[in-house]
Length: 118
Length: 107
View (tube, rainbow over the protein chains, first blue to last red):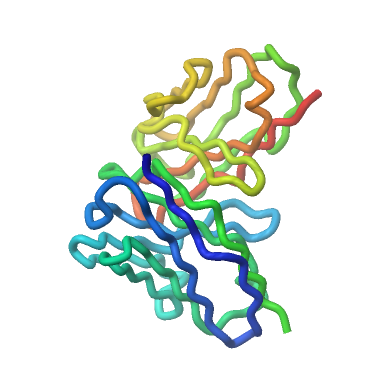
């Protein structure tokens, strides 16, 4: 059974960075497609980007281009999402999810709350 | 970007009710649509993929239909475990986008 377990909640100052982890178990990590989304309070989900660990191919949505980096450590089956230059509008729940070949998401992490506050 | 809308945003229903949620895309997405169930503090759960395909392990009371720009998720007989939020997801083109969600509450 595939499981994605994310790191714990973070409180950050404006202008700083946050790095959220997503540890996978079950399945073959290198064949995963790892997607990252966020959900701001009272809002819908917003897709940030994805990584295919096998190839290293990364796609980012234009909104976050230059401010987000998605990486993976195949040796620990862990994916990471780093968001820089944080502002209050980045306060949200951040989720990782495994994408299938058709790009639907069959397994999700439990979410990581990132709060940006001075 | 493709905009996704859902209706209603909230609904109140009773156990045993038939519930229908609609998702609309701002342009055609063929059948590249998924539906998820989400409970607070939990990981979202895939219910339906490719608009009408039931994900393995999901009860048969859930069904999806539609293509192009209009889609529906139907719960044929609402069960206590189904009180949750539901959202759609288009994966026809980048960036992937999501509907704002429908919260199903107890009447």
